[in-house]
Length: 341
Image (cartoon, rainbow, N blue to C red; front, side, top):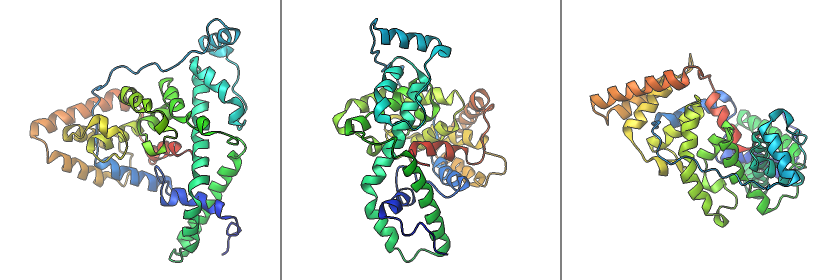
């Protein structure tokens, strides 16, 4: 059945291609599918909770020194009930960027999270509009796709079309310098307690950091902060962070994290064991988790395996027992880092 979306301009189909053919983390048609894909990576990974870096640096830069604005921000931060409300949703980011930055710099966690999420959305919208026309041509010329798959593609196009249309006004007129706010905004929101920002920052891909070449300090900031953010998230029972660190210690991570952790079979086994302890009831990935454990255990002595089992059980009881996993939760949590629907 022909869909009304087909006549839409190539720019619309471009939106679909980004998630279907590439991007930072490809989104699949269902949460269950995403979980299966995420678990494949988890099998090859693991981590330990040993802190390997100095305490996270406080990057907040107060913008006030006794000024009326500064006193207002100080009061708002110290007394949450007195904070001014955030601007309405979908307010053009260009018009509120300075306000959100100032409030975040003063320690307003809500403003920091809002800035992070809006910047993440606008970065994705800009990336799609700049890079996807060529892939749209590829989708149009692909005659090998079966009808069922093509239907899913078109449905996904519609969802992404709605996303870009709904956010066009919010993301209008942002400059390259504005877009470079994403990285420090993500770090700041993470430091102020936003778990999604922490996952996105720790799991960062340099290719998705706008403005990196002009800001080499960001790499040093990452080295100073990523592991502390990861350990804090793990102590809150964050399964998404456990997966990210599992990938890093197992050597399967394609981002910066593995460069900090290095590859370590004993730590990989420990966190493969932790992930297996948190396996959702009725999960279809139990066998793959067992395969991962077998793979890592073949590289360890019996004493190392016994110690790793004990450590995994202790971590699960101390940090994760009160936050049981649900099918699709890890994959769904990481979708937010794409900035799309």
